[in-house]
Structure formats: C-alpha cells, structure tokens
Length: 503
Image (cartoon, rainbow, N blue to C red; front, top):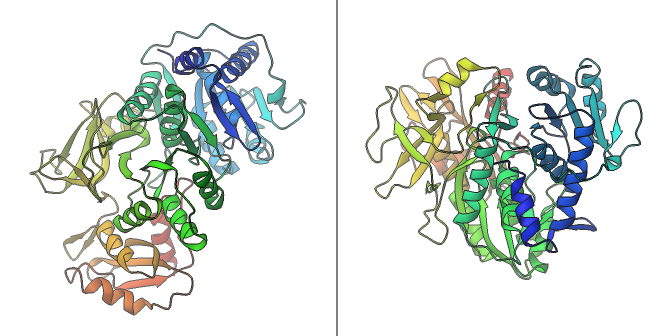
C-alpha cells in the first residue's frame, strides 16, 4: 500500500474536518487532498516518477505536508533534510543520494543553491516563496489537473531516506519503505485513545521521523486537526494549551523542560492536554513528574530510532507506566537484550537492546557493510544499553558508546544525569567521559543552572558524591550557559568531549 492512501481514505471519510492549521490559514481534509493531487500531477509532468529521489528541505508548514504526500503519491523517494543545513552538510547528502529533484523554500535557499550548482542531474528545482525563474520553479505555481491515480507501491518500495544525525561519524541514509512508515503511524495511532475534536500540537520538526510518523502521518490517518508551528515557541504553545478544549502533545525532553520553565514563570490558567508522548531522548524522571503535576496530564515515555520508523517501545496508553522506563514493545515488535557475545542477559542485567518488527528499515543507502553490522538475522542492533524488569518494562541505561569505563568500572552517564536533575538549581545536565592518564576515563559533567541560582561546582559534586558509589561521581563539573544540541534536541556529547580535549 502507498502511504498516500492514508490521506485519501481520511479525505473520503471526513472531507470537511480541519486537517491543518498554520498561522492564519487552515485546510480541510478535502482541500488538502485536492492540493496534494494537483501538486502530484505537476511534479509528475516535470518528469519525476517512481523511484526518483527528491530532497525536501522545508520548514514546518502546510506545504511540507502537501509536498510529502504528493511525492509519495507518484512513488518518488523523499529525502527530508533540516532547512538550516549548511552547504557542507547538504553536499554530503546530495552526493550520497543523487537526487533528481529539490523542493525548498525562501529564505533558506542560499546554501542549497551553492551545492546544487555542482549537481546538474538534480534538474527539477522547486521553491516556496519565490517567483519562477531560471533557478527555481515557484511551488505556488504547481497547479496541474488533479492526479487521481496513486502509484501502486509495494511494501518494499522505499518511500523515504532519512539521514541519521551523524553524532558518531558520517550520516547514514536509512531507507524506510511505505510499509515501514504507514504501519508505524497506524500502530501508534491505534494504541492511544483519541477523539475527533482533539488538536495535535505540531511542534516537532516534520523533517524528522518522529514528527513525520507520530505527528503528521498518525494525525492524518486518524483525521485529527494538526496545528503546525514553524518553530518551537513555549509561550505560543502554552497559549494554545490554555485556549483549546482538548490537545495532544508529542515532544522531546528539551521542549518539556522549556514548557515547565514557561509555565512556572507566567503561570498556567488551564490545561487542555489529554496526554503527552515524550521521545527522541531520555526524559529525566524529575522533569516527567514536574510536567505531569503542572499540566495535570499524563506523559507516556517511548523509544524509537530513525532505523525503526521510529517508534518501537512505549509505556502502554491507559495502562501501567513506570517513570524512568521507556515501556513495553509496541504491537508487532519484539526485543532482546544481549551481552557482547550475542547471548540474552538475565532479567535486570544490562546489555545491548535489539529490536525486530515491521518498522525496521530495509538498510542504509550505499552502505551494505554498515547495514550488515546493524541488522543481523532481522534484529536491529540499536547501540543502546538497556535492562528489563520482571514485568518486561525496558529501561535505557545509556548509549553503548557513551558508557564511561573508569578504572575498569562501568559508569552510565544517564544515571548521574538523573541525580543532577534532582538538585533544585539544575536546569540541564550532560555527563560524559574524558581522557585520564591513570584511569583511562574520568567522569565529567556540564551543567546549566536556573537563573539566579548560586550553587557552586563543588556543591554539585558533593551532592552527587553523597548518592552514588565513589567511582561514579563527576570529578570535573563545569557550569555553562547552554549545552550544544542537535536539531532534535539531543545533547551532542561528542562536541562536549572535543571541547574538553581542546581545553
């Protein structure tokens, strides 16, 4: 089945229901489907067809949704990229993926234009917010007769190539099929109870797989109203939560932290949040408890990765949730936790998390060796260290490559970060290993404190020292103004280590 069928079926079922809201605009499902069909027809007339790759480099807006579904409809392969990428980052992706088309938007065209000049084979170039000229065709001018025939994609046809963040090396293009993406969207949507009047708060960037699956595709499948934000603005999100009758929020921990700070600073008149799904990175338990108390709602923490489309584990909706746990495998998925020899560890022991299910990618583009190392006998090796309790709930301990080995002892940064978050003056914390001539690695922490806080580095060091074994507490603590993060809010520990070494 082609993923575009999700929109077609919903448009038939609820054509007049509001699909998208953005700034001062809104589109019904019928209008959205008609616009997708027109753009699909226009792109097809430009010579783009099944299997052709297209870079989609747009900020979150209704046109992103239109372009995404139009490309899916004609069987093209979508390569969503961050609209803020610079020429260096784009050059790698374009060189690796060899696209035939590019769809972007003003004012984010200077960097791609520099790169596209060296790739004449990417001949179809479209941009939102420009006049058609020799460089770009205006997106607004894409107005062919409606294309009503949808390409009959097979389950194994690639729909999207999503490049991983590259925090441990060069980015890799995860090839996700129509089945990967539509099955994941339908599964997570059906797991949760929603109502037709629910408004989904669209703050996750749509170029990221979490935003595509849990926000865009799942909402379209269910026929919910999706209120899009071009960027995350805590104040604007708070106003929407206060104004609407019923809202749903999908967010990463950084967003949750900033919403807490905003609500504490200005107060919250009322909360319409029925539930919140947190993913993308580990959510500190203290933040989870504080958010639930302030917003009078429930957070269901889950886990996923680009290579899984992305959701594969989540705390069960309406069931037992465990703070600090990412939950249970979602329907269709299986997990294992194994040691370095590939043997299953005992309950409660730490090992690498392996997953298997319908969302697992078909492989990395142009990287058969990387694919073979990552997917073994159908099991995806996540690189995350985890443990499982007696009831099957999974707890992420840390990234396999983030684990610190201090004098032969394993130190898991997340455990230390959780303790730092307990301190009332700590806003954000990142723990990582730094080179040490005697011990191999030493534990270090960069900490952001709240405005007006007077806590010292020594006080924080003692705070942790009193709560953990002697080899675990950070000998090096540095108070910083902010932590370097990826576009999805993940702390870039590789950059923290590099900064340490350079000092």
